[in-house]
Image (cartoon, rainbow, N blue to C red):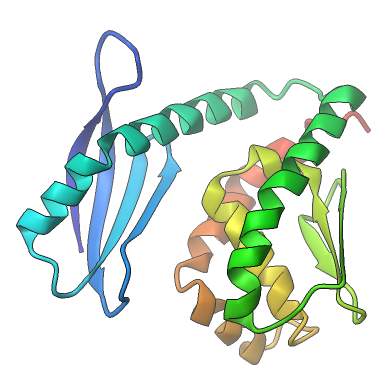
Length: 201
């Protein structure tokens, strides 16, 4: 693993310096995530050369910069902690429904489960929950969280359909799908409360 500087075009007069972490692993595909406005992680198959890595970064520069700008805007929104209106909560619920569809489609085959029904609510303490009937419930505040947190919550709840507990076997299943899930947990512990504070009740 190595960390290299990355100069992101955020539309300001000066580019923003971002920390880019690059790792090689046994995975067969490339993993690219913008974790925050100042942190990007890339995971490559072991056989990738430095030249191939540099080429991939350059080819995806527009995508990376665009998501860094989105992350910066989201973080600024969170820091201000304005109370959400009920109209905004409804919009967040709609946005969460939209973002959940592709994530569930992506992760259900990996976890090897099927979902019965999905609902989205505004909750003060929970990001998600599930029932023995295969029903999943998610917090509308997911729409304000980073992509990797959204993915983690989806994986977490899907894994509960296999094991309705937080046993070692459950966490092993989560880690199988998302080895770096603890990064999302760290964000939730450090930043999640700020989103809950934005609810008007």
